[in-house]
Structure formats: structure tokens, C-alpha cells
Length: 114
Length: 110
Image (cartoon, rainbow over all chains, first blue to last red; front, side, top):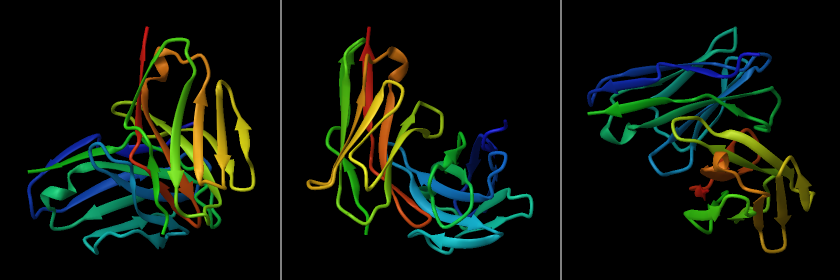
């Protein structure tokens, strides 16, 4: 049973650039949530996708956008990168409905902005 | 909004001891609470959860206690092992989102 997978593992970008991170949910899951985890902090909710739509969003600017595909995989896009965007980006999948219950996390993508 | 935090940033224990990690929350509207374990270089791993209408739940070597009167949550790990060394997060859950605290690092020495 495949768990949540994310790509790439690590990424280095320059300020002002754009980045796309990818996530494949756990088999059987249809909901994907994205989190940003700064060093030494707990994950912060960015947004959640269900049925290819953004269902809820945390306190993140519009530079952060996403997409969910018919196969339930998802992308996180960040435009105009800032140094403060350097973090571990986590994807979590769950089984639909209006609940975040039992979210399974991927290993994350470590983004470094220089 | 939800605010979830932890009392101690680091907890050091001896192998075989019981560990207790604490968490305080401010929003009584959370439907459930979850404890996650995060090892270095990995994503958070689900340990155990508890619904807001419960006081206690037990798993394999772990017990979560919820005290709604004082808005306090704890994770008890029995017979702590070196493999338990990690950062532990509590998270409050509601509609669509999880709100995490900052985490407690558990260090287990042999």
C-alpha cells in the first residue's frame, strides 16, 4: 500500500523565482492538504483540496496556489519566492468529507530560497 | 481561533522509563486531538487520537488523556525506547484543518 509521496525531496531556488511541488496521496485517499513547517516549528496549514477544488485556506498570501488533478494528486505553487518561504513543505492525504481526521503525511519537500 | 501549544520544548528520559508529554489548548471547539511523532527528515507520523467527547484512549504503549476542564492533553509513552526519540506534536482538529503546536523533543538515553 503506497503511502503519501512527494517530489522533489530537496529544492534550492532564488528569490523571485517560482516553484512547483508535487504530492501523490495515499492509495484510496481523495483529499490533499498542504502544510508549511519552518525549522523548529509545527506545521502550518496552507490549504486543502477536495474534488479538485480548494476547500479551505490558511493564513497564506495569494502567492501560494495549488491544484488537484482527477487522480487526486496535487501541486503546490509558490510565486515570487521570498527568503522566508524556506521551509519543509508537507503534503497530507485523507479520505474525503468535511474533516481533517486521520491525515497521513508525506516526507516533505525541503525548499531553500537563497 | 485554535491555539495549541506545549509546556516543554525538550524532555529527556532514560530507556525503560515512562514519558509524559503535555499540551494545552485554547479552543474548546476542536472535534478531536491527535498526537504526531516526527523523526528527523520525515513527515509527522500519526500516533493516536482522541475525540473531544472522550477522556482517555489507549494504544500500543501509548495513552492519551484529555482534560476538558483545564483544556489539557497529555501523551503517555510506557517503557520508552531509543526509537521513541523524536519531536512530538499535538494537533487540534476541526473542519478541514489541523492546528499544530510547536512540538516537544523527546530524548531517550540508554
